[in-house]
Length: 249
Length: 195
Image 1 (cartoon, each protein chain N blue to C red):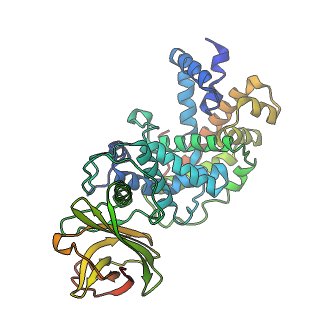
Image 2 (image 1 turned 120 degrees about the horizontal axis):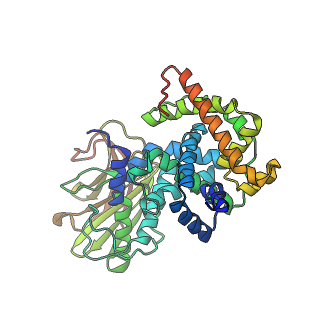
Image 3 (image 1 turned 90 degrees about the horizontal axis):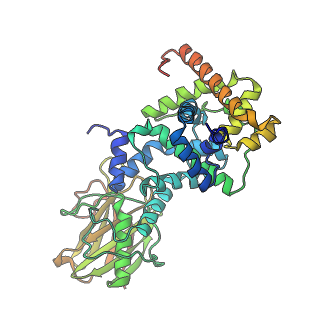
């Protein structure tokens, strides 16, 4: 056998060969039984070595940053969007555009089922980006407000977006208080008749978001938007404390 | 609902199921991050690495099939390769002598103990003991080869040994380590000797 080739096994194992050398070694590997056996042996011998690592606490917020970036990359790579995603109707392939300033990157949030609309956890960000992309392309941004803290220090934004025949409310928030048991965050749209439910969400971090399609009778002009901390997703009027609120101009 | 195996989760990821990726991430965040941190000694680099590892998985740039062995081993191999790549790109050399520091590790209790965490802890304890039984020179060669991913030539220079003997010395050191591992494992209360 070609001894010189066999000697490259260490550098091959450590990924140090150039593309050409690597191809040549792999070709050699196919024919050299000794190298095949040795490579398998090295893999087995080193199998346990990663476990030397002591358990290190990941930095705060790493999961959100990593997953956002992974799915973000994927959006750039995949056009059109994978049609099997259970997200709000998309009637044509989307091109991802840069997200405009009014929409900061948010954490994946778990959204509860409301009125038959089920949004899945990590889809939210995607949806919102879709929504943003769409709104940049064809939709109309009807209203946008920064949400002001009422109780605690949560902040966020709320937008109302016209998409085709539909009107959607997009709310995202940060510094949310922790949820216990069945507790949820509830978005309300308010006019002289009082508050109407406009999206429920949960989050296992302090950030969260929801996209809610307004029913026909709710597709009108609203005076205020608020987010409250509710004991469950059943509240028909606000029962818990109001975290944030703002008036639409 | 029964917990899905890694391979099942992986298959869902291949069909672009974001929830499955998140679940896999939750399962292995700490292990991948800790290993990347061990290799780079830098939290920002370790975060970049875990991000790249999961991007590779999501985009199927790294393909797992069951004939590649255990999913965890495959994941850790990808983590090591990615770490070594990033270290090389940054031109960063790790300090030698980390194996001594490793003895300090794992003293902090792990609160949540998914199954692989238990395996991790057990393997880590046995491995540290086994490494300590290696001769100094063998320990160094394992460290330079595996944890630093150095080339044969660099190892030959660093240790001042003939290039032609590097490969056989690494192999010998790894074989000794394996033997010590088996001995140590045999001494563990629930030690298995299936290797």
